[in-house]
Amino acid sequence: MDSISLTGLADEKLAEARKSHSGRAAHTIHGGHTHELRQTVLALLAGHDLSEHANPGEATLQVLRGHVRLTTGGDSWDGKAGDYVAIPPERHALAAVEDSVVVLTVLKSIPSHSH
Image 1 (cartoon, rainbow, N blue to C red):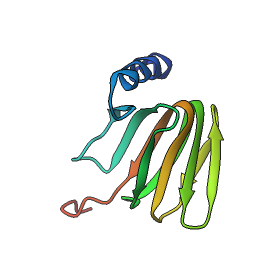
Image 2: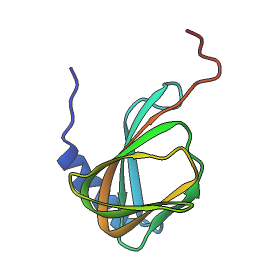
Image 3: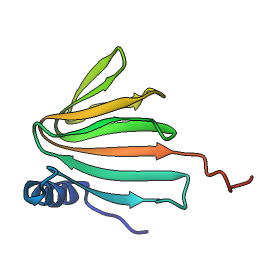
Image 4: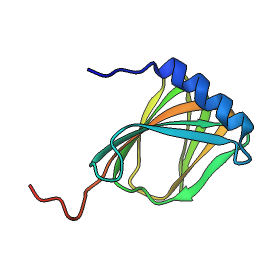
């Protein structure tokens, strides 16, 4: 079995985000475009965000470090280290209140995939 240290990866992605103009860095730890399940470690620096976007499928967010705010049309959720939320199936945005690292898990349907 392959395993990784989420703590170590969080440190690495925060360091990359600090050098990036966008203030963010990400690494897919499982899955990808050819899989239905995708898990990504995402670092966002304080004051940076992922602007509003559509939900590509069922999704959850787990905060590893920092403080983030997830907003939808009429609601918002503040998450800190150790918090977890199911992302509503609607347009949403994610902002870093302080330097943060999250694990985003997405389960999407692959159109060409048949059961």
